[in-house]
Image (cartoon, rainbow, N blue to C red; front, side):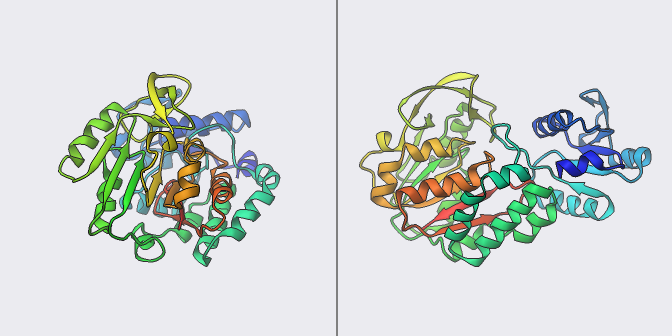
Amino acid sequence: MWNYLKTVEKPIVLYGMGNGADKILNQLNLLQIPVAGVFASDEFVRGQSFHGYPVLTYAQAKKQFGEMVILVCFGSQRPEVLARLKALSLEQELYAPDVPVVGETIFNWSYCQSHLSQLEQVYHALADELSRITFLDILQYKLTGKISSLFHCETPASEVYSTFFQLGSQEVYLDLGAYTGDTIADFCRHVSNYSAIYAVEPDRKNFQKLLRNTQFLSNCHCFQMGIHRHPGQMQFSSKGGRQSAIGNKGTTISVDSVDHLFQGIPFTYIKMDIEGQESAAISGAQETISRLKPKLLISAYHRTEDLFTLPLQILSLRADYKVYLRHHPYVPCWDTNYYFV
């Protein structure tokens, strides 16, 4: 996609502002690809500018540029937004460039070729046809930016719980990146009688909401800290939302490993959605995973390498896992998860 954008004659217009647009604009600047303008959804246009570009409505952009190449610079899972993107893609040439949530490495053709053996290894390890279709569609999306590849492989999150990832009674659930308790609520909808819930969330504001939202649950234990390879202290950028993450700046928080913090707890199900620290968390949970073989749900979209490094890391601990890949409705390819059973 990036090479194609170097040759396109139609004006290139960004759809959206914020961190995603910053990353895409930075990549375009590195490749010396000019941007003609910026537009936003009507409800977000308030006469502001973005990197010196006046923020237009789509109607204004269409009047100014006519036919254009639209680059989607935000993420959404809202049905009305996804429907809007589908409609726009029928009217204009539209792409949603794949830029990592964490890190700066772009998944382009040369990156794909340099990691081809690992990608093939993961593909052949996948347990069902839908996982393999999803894997190829995600690769196609990453290379082309075409949202049709994401729509082709998307499945509702409920599909996993009614097929290969069924939760039974007496589950001992560890939620890493519990946010405000939304995934705990989802867990409770799929189990009739759990044994215990352990929830970890480092962001202070999110943690307070987590406590409120889980206060009436029995045997639910919440920890305000980060999860990593070893116990210690790390910098944490607190944004009061899903994008809060361990990084190189921010406040200092306590972190711990699963093996150290929860030693002796017989987890049956662990979920990891921790903004790019999944590999570090797996390293700190080696003993737990190797000994107990809990069901695992691991996000695979924060870092460019997550698509192949995370499943290979898990399989190095327990080669007897069955590995499934699913993409749930989202543009770009967020909410893409590996499931291990």
